[in-house]
Length: 140
Image 1 (cartoon, helix red, strand yellow):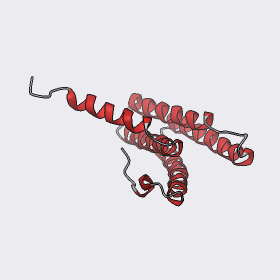
Image 2: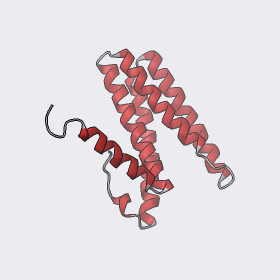
Image 3: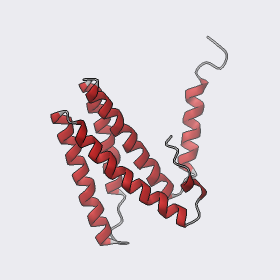
Image 4: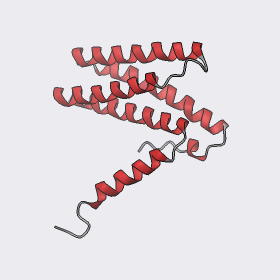
């Protein structure tokens, strides 16, 4: 066993935990979108590789994040916007389910484009508030 063996993943996990714990709600939303995009792209790759089990796992992870985004909607603040976002999230989950059944990577691309547009909107909102993290397009 080499020096420091096993500490890399633990250290990264602690860093990511701290990043989430110190993030603003808007930054957490961006992290959720980043994760959903990353998992969607992994699902697409699994379809191309004909790894159907892996595809299902990554689609499920994406859908779990979309469900979390849907659950975070606050209809008391902006009912019309929340209603539209809820419809969009339901649509994305339906497309992912269909992509899962039909092995259709194009449907995943559609979801990635929608998620990216929403993520960019949050980034723009953070930038207008002067948040320095909004300038980074890094996806961890």
